[in-house]
Length: 204
Image (cartoon, rainbow, N blue to C red; front, top):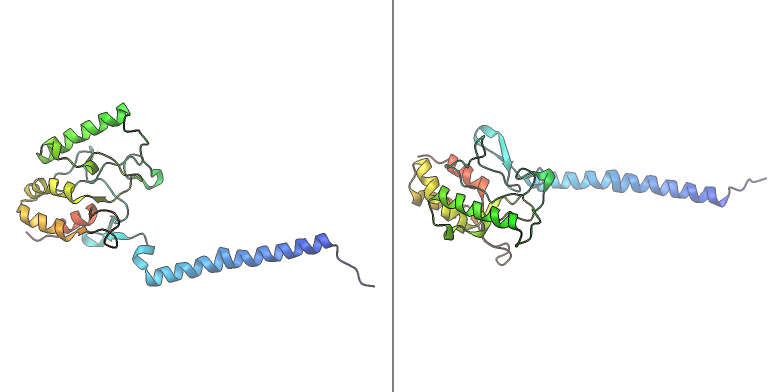
């Protein structure tokens, strides 16, 4: 006499087997395959696009901005400065985001006023020449780029601090200026970390 297995038990068994098979395929095999392909074909990108400085030490990522300041939070004059960041205490990947302050918010207005004054003083330029990306944080707070206009504003100060001719610094900026994506998306931009590293590697 054949014992019939209840329908509910059969369905539960089928569901469990499906769950286990999909777990192996989607949760283990697929991620491992994608990781292997990424490491083989795009090793640098898959590893976070990390950048090595002098001596091979990792100094950052081309995808995440960082501050170039001293222990007191003051800008280091020999380095190009990044745009402001509202992510945590600045460029914190765990707190990515904007300030969410409206354009008419008094706090934002005061922050912009202070940034314009301090940036103009740092670079010895009129306040009217300070570009927008020197005044406002990006939406993510992690933007590693500045505009060519903001880079140009900082050239004389960086050249003076490094005892270099301004023309030489401008040439390095030009070499590290990236055009629009696909020729029409976004705006030209300069990666601050790569630019500063290139200046560190210059032979005077």
